Length: 205
Length: 205
DNA sequence: AGTACAATAGACCAACCTGTCTGTTTATTC
DNA sequence: GAATAAACAGACAGGTTGGTCTATTGTACT
Image (cartoon, rainbow over all chains, first blue to last red; front, side, top):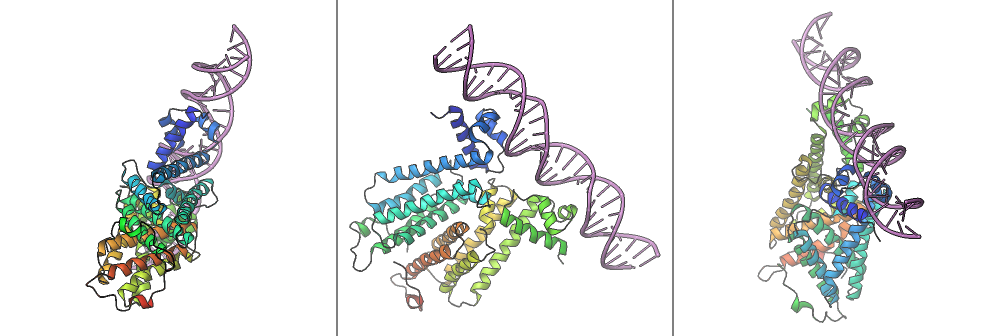
């Protein structure tokens, strides 16, 4: 039974932090936007930093859920990986997108021991393992390395998309991912992926 | 004839902004560190924002110069591109590295019209065109697209390296770049790059 | 009706911020 | 030695910050 005030506070804080940054949005801005008294904030969250942590955790589970929903209908684990980049492209081109909040958090909180920095790192780690697990399910070679590469690709796409808010970065990341996946299952001694090259779009090169 | 005080101010500000962020470091911190009076800051730079812009521009030309120095001794334009990722790896593993300041700037200044945000974007654009020019010199296919992909890779490596400060992200980015380059010059009708596959390290896949 | 709890508004605090102003010292140049 | 300019220390202003405290209001349960 989450208090409705608490939920509204969380939603407003999240929106403001996303669009205007963590340090530049003051407590009072959030309070005004949410139509909530200052004490309910401090009773529910304790401090601004803990509110930020709550927002990050909330956004993290949201994002992971959305990603998993987006690929839930895909059976082929190989295609699931590419589906993640499609979901990223959708996100980047939606008008509510204004950059990855977790990248912003690690930039705004350089002290790696600060609570917001820790929360943001945890999310990025979650994404990282998500990619690695998908690579394992797809029975690809070197799933750890491949997972790292894919999550790095996603970071790069997020980073670039903050500037040019189109599908382009994520689409290009998808193309690169496709090439990597192709390589990771075309090893001598291992059969090519059942429905592999045929259904794939051709690289620009 | 740059005033020595101005130079020291710039250097100290840059160091503090890099390690502690733009919003969290106050004017007085910089003044103390540089051993300089407040008025010399405002006489030389006008405002904190303009100081930030000066720092970003200073760091940008430094970084571009270092990159070009790092690849100056390389004749093969194909290898030059890979050399950029080697330089990135060196940077990321040096103990002074604490994340890409330009990525931090675009995160800390969400308003795209703010002077610091503009300065940071200009740097990222400079890197982007640098990659594209190298692709053109290497006479690779689709140099624009390839250049975008490479700069996105570099962004991803920068982003990931902020968390784990090792060569690993840049090395992985280099491996991916190698694969892309290989594809971009192995087109029917065009000869494979003269010293291509032999001298390259083998992919993990 | 009465009690307990949640949320309210708003005053208040100390610390910090960027930026300005003043008067003094230092160094350079004529 | 006089004059010009740069740099100095430090007080000061005006505003904002995160956070605390109090006293009041509304609401639900028994």
